[in-house]
Length: 65
Length: 272
Image (cartoon, rainbow over all chains, first blue to last red; front, side):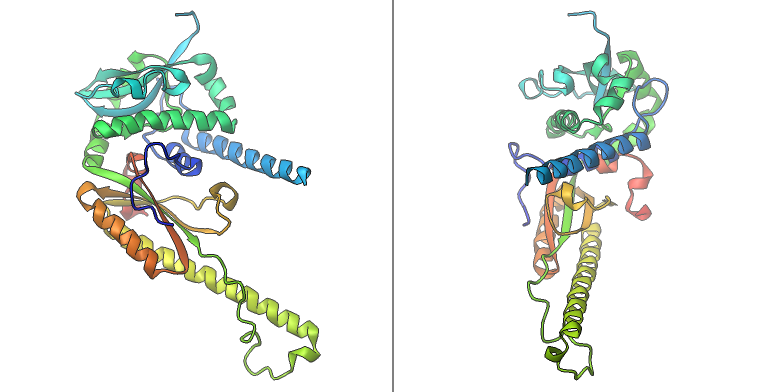
């Protein structure tokens, strides 16, 4: 399905599309002035969060069957 | 307010004159429920908000980023502010979880990175990011029972059920492989065409089926930086490509703030 109109304000953006951008895009500021987590670190952390959470969902689903 | 330690969340950088997004939309709706404000230095404006160190300090961040609900809430709040800024003018988004210790360190950062940031601003001014995602089209229900056997095989399959099964299975796998290869080729053609219409392109890794809410494998996950005056042409091309490449299901997202094109030279299409 192709949406040719811009995403309307109240239409929720898919989380995966948003995470692609906010975790792998944007300007990275590194250095002692910031508490920001290093690039690779951050992506690893969040991917682990995603994978863990999704497999947890699958596990729950299977237990309910 | 209270004595709890605070740090400063960076959303984005805009040109010097720009202010924080106009009231209501983001007031109290920033990351961590905070108000959004501006820090100015080096002819640039950083859009920032105060956050609690107990939730957004380095140790807490590491812990909280593991929590998908927290991550989603934070990512959406971050995006909402950047999106509100993008309506007002050019905006260079910061990566999620860029946290400074104080306004002074935000100002220092603006001064140190002024050249990069200005370059990024000029790159994205008058342009928006569009996303294209393509999935291999759903497999045909029956992968051609008649064409199953290898050429020259005259053996009546019915008399050798084991062989017939293997032939069917092989045909199934072949058909699946062909469909996948066709979809990959389609994705490449689509990417080439969309790259041609854009200023820059960036490929993201395919999203895993479980996360992407689509059962079919993803064959293209790309972002394109498109000049505003070419946006209609770009959308028309997506429409046209959808009709021409039946092996894939193509979807368009956006326009997005230019998240994928502010990180430096590695986002240029020459580097692919």
